[in-house]
Length: 119
Image 1 (cartoon, rainbow, N blue to C red):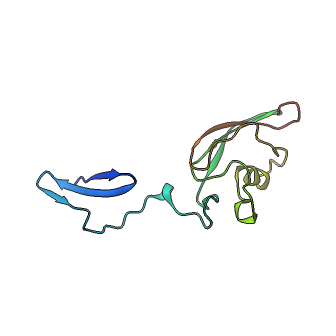
Image 2 (cartoon, rainbow, N blue to C red):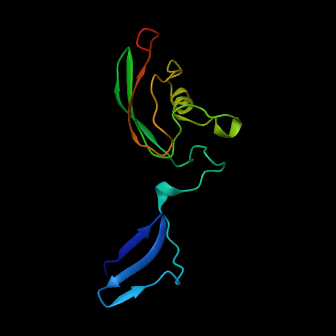
Image 3 (cartoon, rainbow, N blue to C red):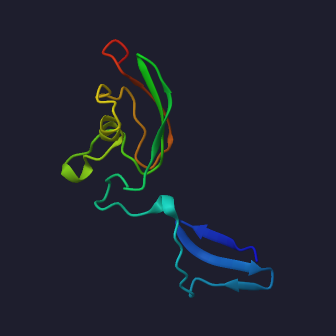
């Protein structure tokens, strides 16, 4: 049966299973939302966050960054995992700088220079 989740301020208010049955906030229901997983350290990249290359040429790398992934490293070892470090691990160490960035919880497309002139 189709369920309707009602959220207010990030909290589950009610679950409507049918027009005749509504569970109130008093019922605790476990809900797993994969893209809202918890990072090992507050503000760090999520281990499950992804990226994929959309375009690669001699000067430019265009990637689709998933939500939950830092674009650049944060402060401290726990926040070293980011798009730039994952690109280096995947064979793109030349992309050491991001001219623009997306926040950790924002997904979208980034154009990254592969040469000093392209930066």
